[in-house]
Length: 348
Image 1 (cartoon, rainbow, N blue to C red):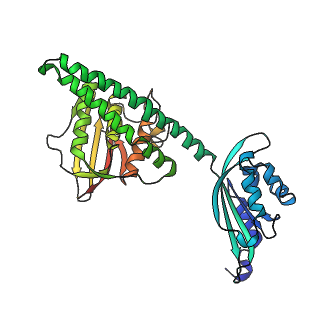
Image 2 (tube, rainbow, N blue to C red):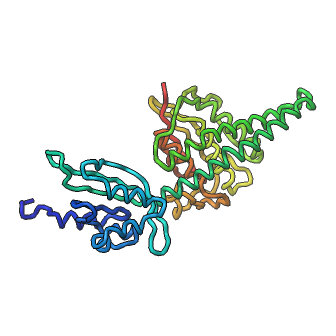
Image 3 (cartoon, rainbow, N blue to C red):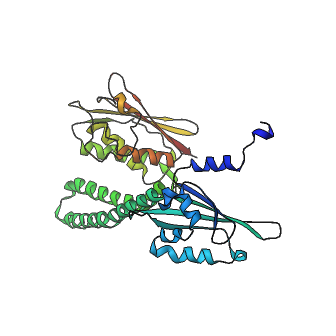
């Protein structure tokens, strides 16, 4: 590209104006906008030209509880302006509230004199709404469900003295399942935060054979009309996961039966141990997956497998497997049904 063809300031501003949900502004003189990108209207509900003509409109478009901070930033002497990142709320003329992540970057010359202040504002409303929803879910999981499980365990333990030794088997399974639910609620908050922030979950070595065996045993009790075939010898390996690994297999095994149109559902589990990973294959003899939902099978809320539930099961499965740095794939089974291939990294 020749010098005459290089991008100039107007070209860059045109590119910035294409950014959705992001506003960029430049201040050279205190209290005056030298430049405001067109994204300002999406975030504050005010056209960029309106903010440049009257910067005080920014305060009017800010949530009342956040205005003092904006006023303070505008009144800060140039020599004291520092880089900052903070959240705030914008209120549109129609009353709509948008959450905004604000980043303020001072640009100084070699002598330390302030030349410009660059602001980058990003709409994070959907993220904040997701956080609030997951916080509510956490309260249910960590408080309501845990309390109910503790009540079940308490009553179950009282029943032990009324049962003969040979009659305690079913009760022990009930108590074991209840304790498993409590254990799962302990990592629910971490999982929710991982989903919201896309951060890494704490992982550790987990025995694949123990988790698989427990989940298959529980599914056999829950679905006595179905057949579950697990290899006689499961590789004694540890994979990179945590307590939520049981949720991965529980959802997949449940799906293999609940979405099965056969009178006698059959679920075949195979395990292949490679040098650096383990592949668990869960195959069923059901109706398979129709081509119109195959591409969106793991999307949030997808119910393409004739589900009557929330459609979140496979989304949770994929999210967890990816957090474990693994991979999940789905293929057709022969002559009928579906095979889920779960790749999990080995440890040790």
